[in-house]
Length: 297
Image 1 (cartoon, helix red, strand yellow):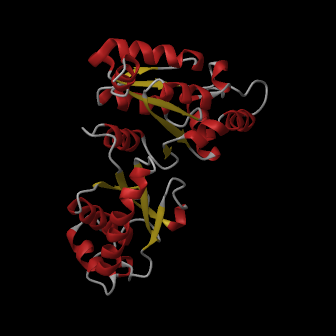
Image 2 (spheres, helix red, strand yellow):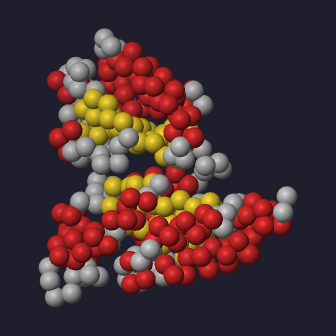
């Protein structure tokens, strides 16, 4: 083994997370969550300094073994060759992951209006103009993302929990599966890799004693899973995900989102998501259930 090969091998032990995304999307919350799970976080880092920061983290050893760099458009160098900067990091042997946070334009506008501050690229125009200009600048970064998180329907605590689940594991390089329940009437999750439709099952909403309860409760779960075809549905998708997981890992994918939908995201999808996540854990996959629309009704 040459000295350079050994050096590259050591650099691969430095875990670098690059956080970017739209203003108002939740970068600061992601940064705080990463700090909670032991990352050294550098906020508003100019892209031109990424390689220098990575080398400093490497030289710091265990104190900065897990380092996150938060990039945004406040630093104009950010709009240059992000892909080239990431390639340079990987060529040096660093293990890098790119996290992109996003949200619907309407949600972003409400967030900016609630704190009464302009968008950093708004200038003399409207909020919508600043958001559109930023999206143009972030096109490349979005395409490079290893992890895409849509925060449109997540509160601060839900976003923090998701980041901590993704990056707080001892072996963060394993494929991690998020089984996400949702309501079709609130829209499809844009970060879904698989979309499962549980609307073929009878709706507990029409059972008076179950209507006010959720799929996380035993009575509703038993009702949903007791319907014809429900268990077969879960078992089939558990086998599918288990069978494709090795291929995703070989292709470098580390995060898989399996979205399970019903009408409102309260009963059927929640019960199915909980059961599917449980079955995946039995198959030794790192799986957790999350519920996007639970509590919206």
